[in-house]
Amino acid sequence: MEDNDITKIGVKESSDIYAVDCGTMFFQVANKAGNVDIIRNAFVEISDIDGIDDILDQNGWKYVKDGHNTYYVIGEDSLRVAQMFPGKVELRRPMKDGVLNKNEDKKMIVLAEIIRSTIGDAPNDKSIICTCVSSESVDASVDSTYHKARLASMFTRLGWKVKVIEEGYAVVLSECPVMDEPDGTQSKFSGIGMSFGSGRSNAVLAYKALPIVGMSCVHSGDWISEQVADQLGIPVSQVTAIKEKKLDFKNLNLDDDVIFALDAFYSAMIKNVFNNFAKKFKEVKSNFEAPIEVVIAGGTSMPNGFCEKVESVIRGLDLPFGIKSVRHASSPRNAVVKGCLAHAIITKKKIDSGVEIKDLFE
Amino acid sequence: MFLISNNSKMSIVISDLNLTIEPKQALDIDLIYDRGITEKSSDLKTAINSKTIRIIQKTSTEKVVTKVIEKNSVEVQSKTIDKETLDSIKESVRQEVALSVNCANTDLINQIKDVISSLNKNSGNVYVERAEKTVPFVSDGVSEDILTKIHAKNLNKMTTNTESFLSKDKSADLDNVDDLVSDLENFDI
Image 1: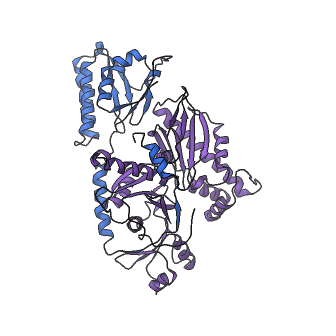
Image 2: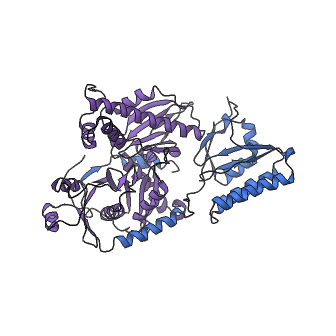
Image 3: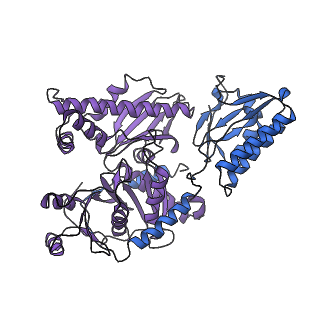
C-alpha cells in the first residue's frame, strides 16, 4: 500500500519506538503503529547556482542547507535536480555496498539530517531504535565495525537507545520461517533469512529466534548491473532499468542480450551467496537434521520468478544442509524494517517490565 | 539432541570435553559425545550455570549417534611436557594477551587465565587454542562504544547551523506487526 503524495515528515504522532533500515538504495523508518516512511538514499550538492533558494522553494523540493550555504537536495527530488542541471550536479549516494560510502565525504551530514528529520529527539530516556547492519563480510569488502559505530552515533546523539541486529536476522523475525522437527513438532523463527539488496546480500540462519550464523557479500543488485554493463558495454542505468521493468524469470527472452546476461549474473550471484553461506555454516559446525526453510527479501529479489530461480540454482549445489522450501517475504521491500520493528517493540516491552536497560544494550 | 549455543562473544573452551565453541555457534553435542560423557563434564556445567553456554534443546538419550570431530588444535601429551616447555607455552599465551587484547577487556583476560590454569590442571591432554573474533574491538583498541561517542560529537559539530526541509518520498504500512510481536514474546530474543 504505497502512495506518492509528499507529506512533511515530523507531523506524525510522536513515537518512542522506531525501526530503521538504512539501505543502499532506500532509507526506511517505521513507527510502532507500522507506518513506514521511505526516502531514496541519494542526494545532489548545489552551491553555485544563482537563485537556488527560489528554485527549491517553488518546486517544493526536499533539501538540507548547511552552515556554509551549501544545499543538498535529498531523495527522489535529487534525481529531478540532476536531470535539470546536467553536467552541473552529480547524483551521489551516502551508502555503497551496504555500508557508508567511504568515497563520499558528505554522507554523514546527509544521513544525520534525514534521521533527525524523520525521528527527531528521543521523547524520553527509554526510547528505542532498532536498526540493522550487514553480517560479517565474507569477501572482506567492508569494515562493519566502523559502519555500525557511525550509524549508531546518528541515533545516540539524539538521545535514542540503539539496538543493532543483523539484516538477515531481521528477515527471520519478520517472516517467521518454520522448521519441522524429526519428532513431529514445529519450531518457529527457525530458518534462513536472506536479503538481496542493492549493495549487499545477507543471510542469517536462526533457530527458535536465536541467530546462529550469518554472512554478507558484495554480490548483489549493483554488482549484477555493473557486471552486465561491463560485459555488454552499455550504461549501468540502462541495465538497471531493464532489470527493474523487463526481467521475468518465468518468461525469459534469451534473444535479448541484456536479459540473457542478467539471467547469467543472477545465477552467479545466487551461487555465490549460497556457497559462501554453506562455508560459514560448516565453519561453526552447526548441525541440523531437518531441512531448512529459506525466506527471501530485498529489492534485488523483486523480478517475477526469483524464488523459483533460486530453487533451480541451488538444486545443483552441494550444500551441507537440506532446503525445505524457498519463499518470498510477504512484503519483500519492507521485511527488514518490519523485523527491526518487532525487535524494537519486544525490547521496549522488556524495559517497561523492569529489565535493566544496561542488560539489553551492551 | 543436546543442542547448546555459545551465548557470549568469545570462543569458549570446554577443557574436559576438548571442545571449543565459537561465538554464536550452535552445536548438537550428542553428535560428538555420548550423553554419559557430557553429563559428567564439570566444565560444561560451569559454562551453563554461568549462562555463557545456553541449552537450546535437550531431548532424551535414545538413538544418540557418537561421532568424533576433527579439531585444529595443539595437542600435547602431558607426559612429554617438562617445566621449561610449560613455562614457554604460558609465556606465549601471556604475550598473545599483551599484543592483541585491550587491558580493559577483563572477560577475555579471565578466559585466557582459564586456559593457562587448564595447562596445570589437565593430567591427560594439554589443549591450547587461541580464541578468535573475541570482542567488538577494532584494530586500534578503541571500543565500539567509544567510537560511537566520537562520531556523535563530530556529527553535532558538523550539523550546527544546519536547516532541513525534508519529506518522505513514499509510504507503506506494515501488516500483522502485533501478531508477530505476540509470537516473538515466547522466545528469548
